Image (cartoon, rainbow, N blue to C red):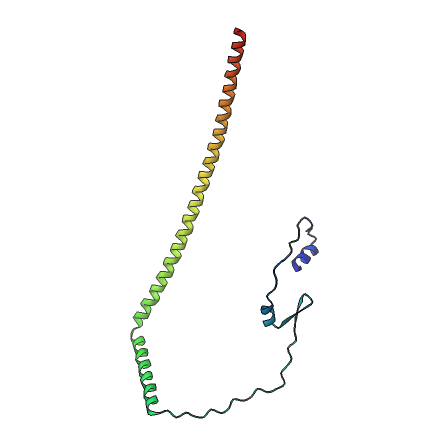
Length: 167
């Protein structure tokens, strides 16, 4: 409606265009989640009441004592993470290789896309040439057909005239 009003304000004549009724219904869940309420076939944003209650404070956290077994497991996980960190730091060339491979793959995909687009454009050009050639063949065939028909009519008239003179 806004676009229609803008076009009408711009003195554009829209009477030659027919209006298209919209049969789509709005998703009430989507509007409801955005704090809108439907009243008499229109959506109205409902007012959100300000909360006057204070949020409850979290209860204080008591320190947890770990058993020797749990402490051993946590220490083992920590050592494994340290080992993994050292492995990654000692292999920077591996990370560079992975990065270069992903860049090459991206470049190859881009090249493939360009090649595919070029091929599709070439196919379209070829089809246009084929269709234009078919059109010219059809025009030449129509001209040939007309010429043959006129020649046949000419000889038929000569034969008929000759036969009429002989009888």
